[in-house]
Image (cartoon, rainbow, N blue to C red; front, side, top):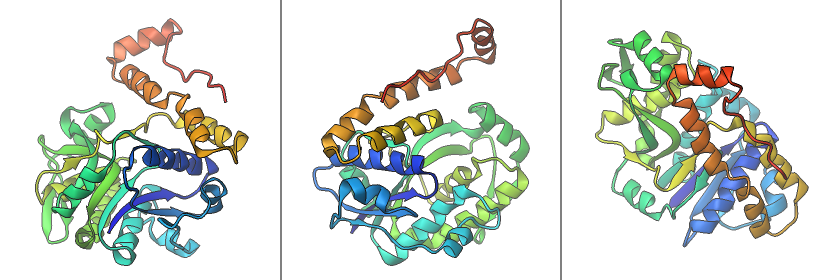
Length: 291
């Protein structure tokens, strides 16, 4: 069984992001797979999607949600609990995607890779030591530190690769390693409390078993556009009940893919150039988006 997994827990804006990602998936999937939506608001989806035989909404208690935040009490760790639950109750090839994603190709080849034992994350962000400002800062704090993953040791060194965890995929037997990922993440958060430690934990643990595959050609992860969330929510609220094709086109007209690239280009400029642009009043800003 192939399962596409979403975690849409919390604000209505996250539900809207997940709904748009789902609409984009249906546009590219030749044969939709089983879809698991872990959410505290199934009606946010059923009001437009109705009841579909391939979509399941696993029931999770408030107490379980809290347990899944780990000893670090981080919302980023919820996806580890979701993946463990999915592996136990819906075994097969599991492909988790963040809500702020847009499908660009049918992910059938990704599921084929998972069936062959490949572990997949969204995309390599390069070596931690030479990455963006935050990555380099994390490296300076953690370099040469040794952490434990099960009965193995992992060291943060100049060759450590950081992967974006907006997509996480593996065959369900690999879920036996998730407690090691969680424990490793807790160690990393204790060493340096930055949000990216969850993705570093996946990167370090999965790398112990060989090269990590990338999902980037199949799905866009617009992680840098948090300001677009309320606009997406307004689109689906304003046009609730309209045909799914219309909802998809209205959301797509916001051009989140293009905005993602533009903001990322600005973010990656040398610091001195960003400073000059700010002084000139030309820093990148989210444009006003019509709904």
